[in-house]
Image 1 (cartoon, helix red, strand yellow):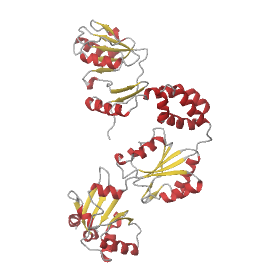
Image 2 (cartoon, rainbow, N blue to C red):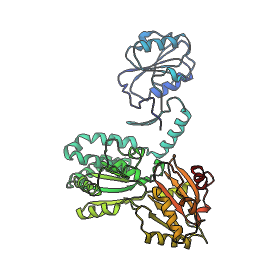
Image 3 (cartoon, one colour):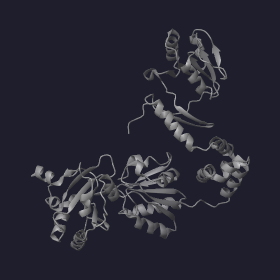
Image 4 (cartoon, rainbow, N blue to C red):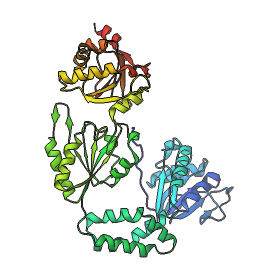
Length: 463
């Protein structure tokens, strides 16, 4: 994701002027936007060709004068003649933010596509690159919003001092979340009873004892932000603290509330900045303080995520918790390669296991499963892939059994290799950096491995 060249903000114009230089259609478009604000809108142009009737604007039908910018908050120039050039020079000299219509390189700011639900405003900007896309996005967002969003915002604002007086700071956010997401409150607004319903809700929150904390064990998926579930996104926005693993991408963590505390517990291969016991203690402590904790785990929390140990600690401490499933790496690897891990008349089942630390009895069992037609998905086995492949062959698995290796499954930087158990067992294949899933079984050959590197070719190149 590239860096923004502009900083999104809401600029205060109340009690000041917005000056528009120009009298044509582009000036009219800017005037329609500007008159939605509490600023005085001034039009300066020698030729007035557009119809400004119905807009609350002051029109000076004359040439531009630098004094026109006195008290101006913003300047729009929609005139490519001498008046426009003079206005640009004057705005620069007086350090007033300037927008030159349809000339992005001369703009200090851009006019976004705005959704107006005063006092709520949503602006979609493209830094001048794609205004049509910004308008399309605005239409989509508008379709999602209740027409009473602005009324809800004013209601919340009118209660601010009363809420601060009766609720501790830690409970105020939860009250507002309940207020602003309640269908009952919205219905009451439509009936003219919004404030009464809101005060009743406030009494309910004030009558509660200290809010109990909760831990949400959330699957972050394999790394792509758009593979996160809607429930995971919602809870990340509600969390007071986000406790995340090393493998959870920064972009997923940043989907949380901006003011949420973020704690990386940093468990990576060969380096554990937090022991599992310390993580358990941390979760219990944070929830015990009444905080809502999002415990972000790569993939699915219940698949090699050590969630069982954390759940046991939470149960013992009497802490409420819930599980939010995520896309496991094995399923992401199957999706990346269009591999049917179960296939009629070929594979009736799918086994997920960790290759790291597997003993001979486990390997013998896996070999028997592969012979029976079941598909295997082995995690954490990239460094010992050759040893595992050789052992499976030694215990009876066919050397020709298809093998697919997907590194960084579900991510844009994923890489794939395909071959057989015999080719993997040579130990000469080289894989990209990152976590890998090794898929083994007859059904694996039915996947789309056309763009995957060939294990045999890799071995030949190394040899």
